[in-house]
Length: 290
Image 1: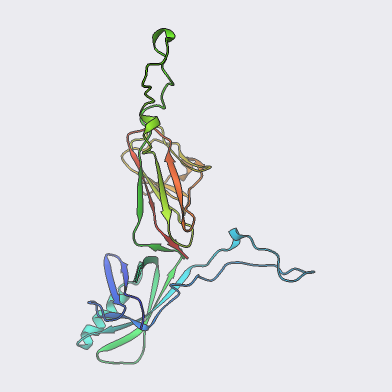
Image 2 (image 1 turned 180 degrees about the horizontal axis):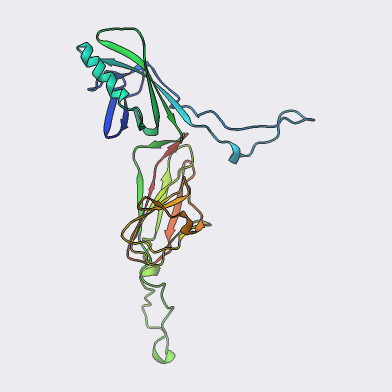
């Protein structure tokens, strides 16, 4: 039997749930043939050139090891007390046509999803209380992402960065205890995000105003900077597509530095907000698999 506990297919506000060991309330089941392409890497998009005077092929760089879209095949069954119930269950899958579908699979401690377009096929054999078939989902982005999201918040440096030490009137010396100000003692502008998956994760960064002079976020040697004011409408920075968006409008042209941060497989990344303002920045990251 399939070890899958639950598979959910959702699009357009509708969800069809397939049970893993028994039929769900929607009358659907992932059969014992299971799912193909879920725990596999997609086809590799790697080309190699054979050596003319030696054994094997020329070396391939790790950065050139890329993958095609993910194709997932779900073997399903629909059941009901009557033929009408069986058809109603099958129609829950057919309703996914013409839409981008999210398939979520909860399997033991794993709970991940992909998104793509669906094709539904049913077997020609007629049975009054049962229908079987396959659902094929093609996901342009081959990564499986954790359903749960890790979220951290960065607060801005307050006001300016300070004016140095004050020796008092007449330069008579420091007054103790020395106060270094809020900026030096408040690390709320720094946060670390984790990725417990097996492939590089690409965070989504949302900047909520006000940042009248734009915003800059550093991560190691990388710097991501946006030159325009950020106000009531949030700025969304997508590290996978390397784009900036405000209210549905692409504003990538206003990026003056494009060091989009990534989080390595099984690792972490520390981000710091280097801009003054009264808003905040939210960084979301999901465990990522391929």
